[in-house]
Each structure stands twice: as C-alpha cells, then as structure tokens.
Length: 476
Image (cartoon, rainbow, N blue to C red; front, side):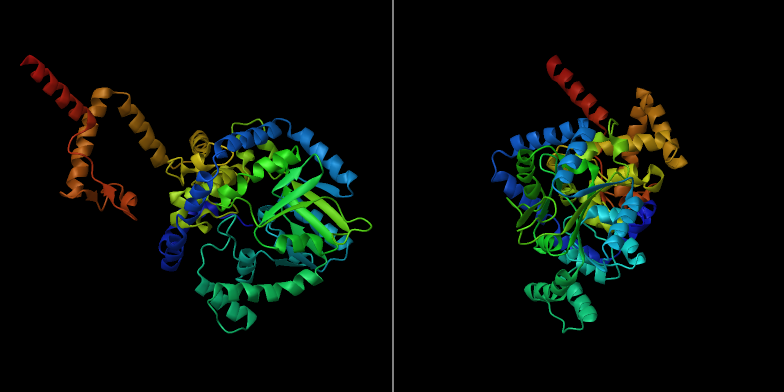
C-alpha cells in the first residue's frame, strides 16, 4: 500500500471539509466505545485477564526467536510449509511463486492487514492472478476502485448504506436497495461462486500457536472459513510478532480481543487451522503455507518501542481516539490509522515519512486506558516526538518556539510576567465571551473549534491573592 502519511495535514483538511464523511463519522462515533464499556462491565475478571494477556505478549517478545522456531517445527510436522519474508515486497514474491507453482488463477482473501502492508493485491494482479476480497467491508472497498480501508476491524465504517447501495447498483447492475440485509444477500450471491471456483485462499492470522503449529483466525463473517477450507491451497500471511506459546494462552487472549474490538463476548467464528487435510478429512486445503513477515518488526525487539509489538489489532485505541473519530482513517495515509498507526507507521516506514503522525493525538490517554495489552501509546508517541526533534525533522519555527519557551520557563519572574501578559491578550481576543473564535497569532488552533477563554488572572495571581486574604484574616 502506497504511503501518504507525509501529507497528513493536507489530508486532514480534506476530510474535515468532506460533509458526507463527517456525517458518516458522526453517526458511528462512540458506538464501539459504548459496546466495549458494556462488555467490560459485564465481565468482572476483565482487569485480571488483561494483566495476564499483557504478560503473555510481553514474555513472548523476550524469546521471540525461540517461539517462532518452535512454531515452525510444529507447523512443518503437521504438513505445512513455513516461509519467512523480510518485508512486504518479499512476501508478495513468495506468494506469487506459490500461485505460479500451483497454477492459481483466482485467490479469495479473508481480511489481512499484512496483505495491505505488502500491497499484495497489486502484486498478484501483476503476476496474472485475480485477487477477490471476501470480507464484506473489504469487498466494498475493492469494487470502489481499490479504496484502502479506514479501520482495521470495520474497513468501510466511513461509508453510509446509501453510498454502498449506489456502488452495488453501478457495479452489479442491480436495482438500488437500502435495506442492509438485502445488500448483504446481494454481496453473498456475487461472492459465493468465487469461493467455489478459487484455486487459493489467503487469510491473515490473529495468533500463531507454537504448541500446535496452528493459526487462529477470529472473524464475524463466514468468509474466513470458506477461504481456508474450500480452495486447494491456503496461505496464512501474518507478522512474526503474532506467535503465542500455547492454546491456553489463546483462550486468555480470546477473552479480551472481541470485547475490546466490538464489545462481543466472543466473535461469531473462531477458526483453528493446522496443516493441510489428510486422508479421510472431509474438507481443507491440499497445501498449506505460512508466510511470516518481518517488515521492521525485528528491529523493535529490545528497543524502547518494543511494547508496540504486543498489539493484537483490536482497534480499541482508534474507537476511543477523539482525533481518529474526527478525521477518519484515510487521513493517516497508510494501513494503520488512529493511535496505533501514529506509532506503527513511523516505526515501520520511517519518521521522515510520517513526521506529523506522532503529533496526531491529544495525549489524553484514552487509547492507553482501553488497550487490552496495556501498550503505553501516548508515551510511545511522546518518544517519537523527541526523536523527531533530535533528528531535526520538526519545522525550524517549532523548534525555535520550544527553545524560547524553555528559556522563559527557566526564569520564574520572566515566566510569571509572560503568563500575565498572555492571559490579558487571550481575554482581549475573547471580547467578553467565554470562547475565543480566532486565535490571533495562532489561527490554526481555532480553525475547526473555539478555544476556551482563560480566567481573568493567572494561577500565580489567584494564589497570591488567596494567601494575602488569609494573612489579613489572621491579623484580625
């Protein structure tokens, strides 16, 4: 997937000016957060399970090579082939080679964010193989000129049913319909022949289980099982950090993943896939491959950003992020939006290609509070900001302003004077109102919202006045 994160500010402006997008985002805003809150409230052991899940993911990363080798040995023992890809481009080469080796013409795909990282669809098409997205949201985006997803769990959350109806009518040549059930039946009728006729199925992987050499896939649609059992070749494409030691660990993680993602106690489908089918098996692929992608993940091991590798891709951080909920996922310019994307994109693609993303947050810590594996997202974004300053990637005006502020802040009397002047200036801008509509020297602050007017006096002045009043009261 082409990265456009370096144009984040421009893309944000476009999304804020898109009235239809803003209506769609407003319609869904807060819905998943409310569902998660209800699911957590109904599960008294959530905090304890979350702590255990965090430790599982943390301990795996301490010995990642050991667990990956154990997974490879078990998967191979069960008849699968494990391939290692250094990056997305290499993964595309490996999968295209698999397709060529087995005479594959059509690939049906279950949702895979790593395939988005790799730009797999374009690579398959270049190799003469037709990819078909079968997740309903991903399918809608594919037939809409290969539009990228805007959310990792709900890729088409930014569109209304009217937009989908218009798209289906144009692409399928059917009468427009706005009943959601009718639209899903129409998509099912189009996709069912694709499942039956495909030569290869491709899935992602929520977790890789070292104990059994299995991949676990968590979905809410039946397409995942159809992709992995009907075609004669199944390829599971995922990142190297997804490995976990045991089935018991999987059961722990499955108790928090769906609750954090969609507010469900359990998703509709949990599939455990272990090797190709054997004699007597009623279904399953004849050949099974695992393509495990590094793509910058190994570089994070042992670094100050290793915590990010714990991510289980639930989407809770973006469901609670006020920035994401205002601008939508496409503004972030790459596969992962929201707080997770503000950390992952700079780490995987380079700080210089995503210099604004670590700043695309209020650092309110809603994302950190709801993360099911306790990733300190605001802290990681702050560290990325520091690295940008160290590397000289921030604008000179910003660096100069911060140096000036630090110089003033180190001189208490001067800082107190500047505070008094600043408060009077902001009060003057407010013009007697409790909100500032245009922020004078920094109009960008009020381009999309009003700024609260400050109190008439600074904290120092108020404190000094209160102390003086106490002294006068004591003197009496």
